[in-house]
Length: 91
View 1 (cartoon, rainbow, N blue to C red):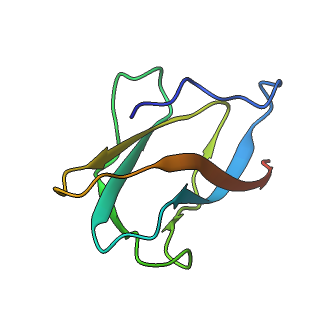
View 2: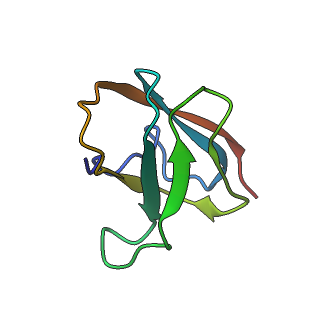
């Protein structure tokens, strides 16, 4: 899954604190990465176990807009409801 670019309706800088995948509880692991430059480059994939909702990708990075890419390669089906993002206004 690749999300559209998200800017929250403003081009102000945002401090992205964490991203959490909201999905079925699974024994598998998803990997997630982000892009801040219109899909040109990505940070390395970060594993997120889907066994509970306490796992997330934490980051201190700021950006004006961001997109995420989520990969899941287990043999079990997965239903993703959404991606929960925690952020504050950047400097």
